Image (cartoon, rainbow, N blue to C red; front, top):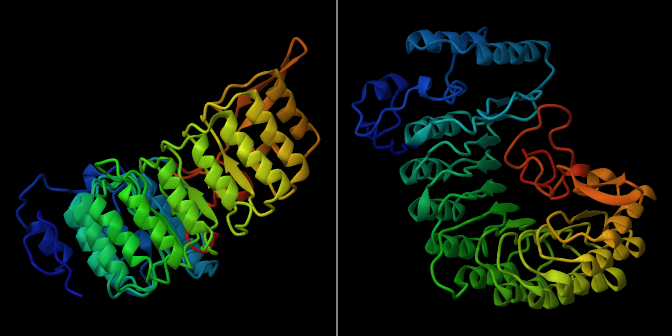
Length: 446
């Protein structure tokens, strides 16, 4: 495939890196030294069978007159050793700029999140996807990639049949770039997880995604968080609701910051009566109140597939918590995790939710920080933890006692515990403490 290079590269086809490097720039040029961890293009090149990634990287740095990064060199040496020992059929190079490296995963992928790749880096990433035919996982999040870089990545996926998971989170591809990704999903039948959260998508592209997903049977998880929407008509929610009535493959849906109100949650709940695949619904950071919980509580009486609901940073208050508690106590036996963080809920509603955990043994994860705790709340959740009904890793609060009185402190658990960062110690994707099944590398549950 002859992908179009970004503006800083004048050639009109996927030329060699040397040709691209010599091209005059129309905007501030990107060089590996500008990135915190250079190396986005180090996997796609071909060397002799005896050459390893370490040697390849060293040669490439000398060729480009760039300083060798000792961190990357050490990591590639470790990977080469694993390959020689035959310990892994594939690898993931985690070179994220915002965390220390975690042990190499046994998946074929590349993580170069949180660098400064820009559209020029997207050009090389597109070449990588085009040439590295066993690449399954690619993380380009927060790399200053714009609409033109988004177009390059989207177009190269038209013919790709191996990439399963792509993270573009935080790259401002805007409505134009979003439309190219929506068009790609009309053709591509292999991509399973697509993260376009915080990409400044517009209403047009959100509607396009909703339309395409009525037909696409491959996508299992999609993140459309924080689009740039105008107006009060909740048009995006209406279209996504219609999509959910027809789509029977989508498992994870992120709709954080969609300006969803009670009428919008009603649209989604109407669809959930007919949908039998969605397991994880994220409607955090919206404008849903206790009236919207009437619709959600009602659909949970009959829906048997939803396992995780994120209602964080809405305003359901005591009444909304009571509606949910009643359903979870008497009807629903499929929901596993609920986040009501920062919902202006007082002791009455929080205690009601704790009581539902005593009778509903499926309901195992609850996140409540940011609400109005009273003594009854602190005692109720302390009792759940002490009796073993609520595991410490399955909630975001921890009891402590001062002068004979129980209080609750915040702990760093949550539905998306490792969504934007990687743990520097311990297991990075431990589902027991990350109930949301966040969009993790392929090979793990979505």
